[in-house]
Amino acid sequence: MTKRTPYLLAAMASAVAPDLSVVAVHDAQNLSETGIRGDIEIAVALDTQGAEYDVAVADSSTAGKILRKRALAAKLMERSTEVSRLTIRLEKAIATGDVEGHPVTLTRHLEGTPLPFDQLSLAQCTSLGTAIASVHLVDTDFLLDAGYPRFTAEGIRADLTAWIARLKQSPEVPQAIVERWEQLAGIDALWQFTPRTLHGDFSPNDILFRDDSVRAMRNWENIQVSDPARDFAWAYEDWMTDQQRDALLSAYGRMMGSHMDARIVPRARLWRQMDIVRDLLRALDAADRTWIRAARARVEKLAALLNPVIPVTPKAPSAESPHDEASSTITVGTLLSESSDSPVASEQNSAEHTPAPAPHHDPIPVPSAQNSAENGTDGSVVDPELEELRAAKTEAFDRHLAHDAEETHETETQAHAEGLQGLRGLSDKPGYVSLDEDEDEDNSSESPSADD
Image 1 (tube, rainbow, N blue to C red):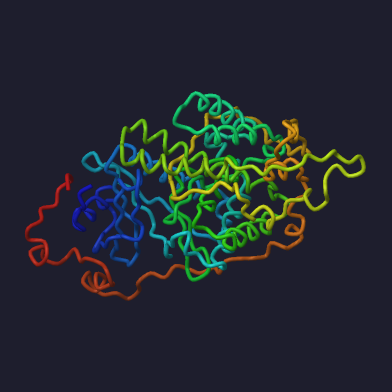
Image 2: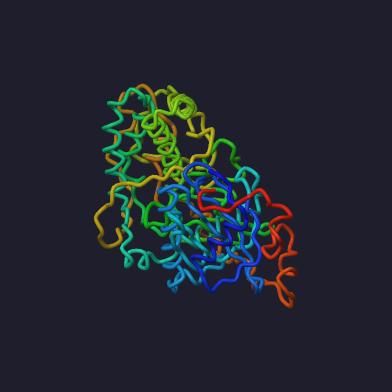
């Protein structure tokens, strides 16, 4: 992608918003992305009133679809009364359009700093867990009324089962992965959740921090009504620590209260695994050797982590106590403790998982835990993680649900430049390139073009 000049980006912003008087532009390197999102160039524009806007330009048809979906989601959330109650700031779409074949969007600039997930402090993880919970508690009606699909627990489980059947025939996917997924798909208790409003595909640039608090969330092109565990798949990269995950999930559980999903952790791990395998399949479809080698290494590592099981002597079930009290309740601490076969990945993958649309119907009630799978069917080995899931009660996380969810974010009004005199005064803000200066000074050899 050829980098555009600030002058061209300003012209493209003015083309989609003729009433906007852009006087300066600067790069937004901290918001740059990779993968499909890497085809989107972002800059920050400044107008005569001192207001800042993000100018996003797409260089591919796929990136163009992402921008249009972002703008649609931003408009939809802006009209929602439920969403307006969130303490975190969200994108506000100002204008969209095509400039010489390139999709362009203009959104209100959000203050804050994106941080790599592995660098988050425990306080920042706590704030992020609370922020994600606040999104998950938003009523789903505004999305369903707008025609967004609702991915039910039954539908997602059926999609996974169908995918497993296809993967059994694939020589590229190790059977250790397929067999583990088949076991998880057979555990009824794992698939008892209520679909919620979620972001759908977090990457570090989607979350903006101010000090220890989440300031804003952006890039809502994958907003959906689906499994809340999807929003935590990123937390099961191998560079995230147990302490970070514990802070994240504990804060989330406190905020969710009685709505907390006791099986969210194992499903978050499963979503992460699906992302890893899907990345390999996409690499094979693209016939990209470098991509294939990297993706295959991740899949092989995952298979090695899922394969070991611990041989034990099978115990006869007790009539008085079928399950130990200690193993019958999953708490944040026990779920977050990594066993020898915990699935983790070596790299972040921002690939989107889009299951086949499930039938739209009324919200499903969460039944009591039950499971049709048998424990230790071969009588010789037992996978401790699967056994813990089978034995778990629905009252999990009780010790965290007792806490009141009173954590709030500091509310502030966004400060704009005031009393600035003249265009040159506005463009003196650090990092900006003034648009009223002669191009000959720094850009005598550049000729802005839509093809840059």
